[in-house]
Image 1 (cartoon, rainbow, N blue to C red):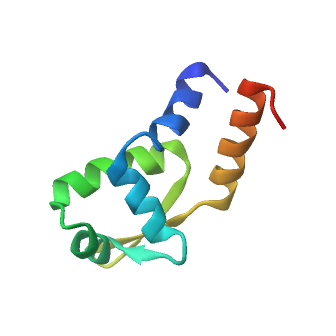
Image 2 (tube, helix red, strand yellow):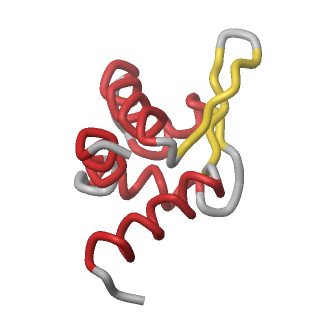
Length: 91
């Protein structure tokens, strides 16, 4: 994994809005429409955050009609945990 790839993963965690999105997704998949309502942000802002989260591999999206449904990617979370362990050399 390149340093650029690693930075994408950690970028996903370094914004308050993205942390809130991850908290919202922690219990179940959510439609973008529900995230928009809960977070009280615009569609373009949500799209920006979701692109970063999806590009990092932490979140995955699936299209259903005109909406995208997002969920936490367990494999992405495992990669993030492993990266932190490897970078810090901590268990």
